[in-house]
Amino acid sequence: MTNYPFVLLLSSLLSAQEIRPTIGSIEVLDPSLKNLIAVDATIEVLASGFDWSEGPAWDKKNSRILFSDVPQNTIYQWSEKDGISVYLTPSGYTGPADYSSEPGSNGLAFDQKGYLHFCEHGDRRLSVLTNQDGGKMTIADRVDGKRFNSPNDLCHHPDGSIYFTDPPYGLPQKEKDPRRETGIFGVYRVAPDGKVTTVISNLDRPNGVTLSPDSKTLYIAQSQGGKAWLLSYPVKSDGSLGKENLLYDATPLSKELPGMPDGLKTDKQGNIWCTGPGGVLILNKEGKLLGRILTGQRTANCAFGDDGSMLYMTADSYLLRVKTKVIGTGF
Image (cartoon, rainbow, N blue to C red; front, side, top):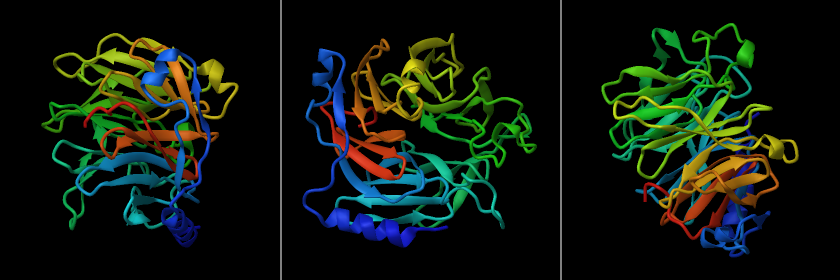
């Protein structure tokens, strides 16, 4: 059931307050964390009342954060000036009847030209909004003639290619759904000419994806019980990937706190900010866990915004943010 009025009313009240509600805390596991975020940094609640918030992306042109509510098939927008409002609905499924419990868009990302790209669960495709007044255009919806499961998250390479993950979360019966065609839960690359290739085929639940600041390393978060991993892969000159490396194993943490490795971003120093058990894990590029942003919620994804130092987080029913001491990749 759509709950726009509740979300918009509650969030408008939050936006109108000079002092917003706060949540959680910062956990220091290594002294170097203090160079990345203040130990007393405040985690602000910007909006709440969502079913499952996901896939945030900072819109530099309009100074706003966009994010998906996947079950509601809706994208919201929030800005300091205007607060919360619906940006787009339907966002990821345009069929005539109910499809699944997670039909909407998931990961969102702006390309180098400022066009918004979508991972769409229900329509099972990667798409782009052609302009502010026009519709979407399909970038890719299949590989080797077979439809994707439910594209989940994406990132852009400076060469114009796109990497994205394709787990089964958006299918009505998930991994057991008879609509599945590929036989894998893959990670794919869309080349600038539109050609789609499989770059990873051996993972159970590939989820978040991002690149290092120099775009020479691809990071993948796997959200699988017993295999809650952050993985890294060298990016070859042709866009294919080298040998898999287990950068961090979050499986022990996943048994203690809610959440799995999910969405992730890097900062310009090469540190990795990965949502996971308890909130957001902060790791250096060698995979050492430096600390955590403890939201107390299952936290799905994050994105740097504002001047590049503000980290926005989608955490279950919340949209949150916290000030850091770093600048995110892309700013």
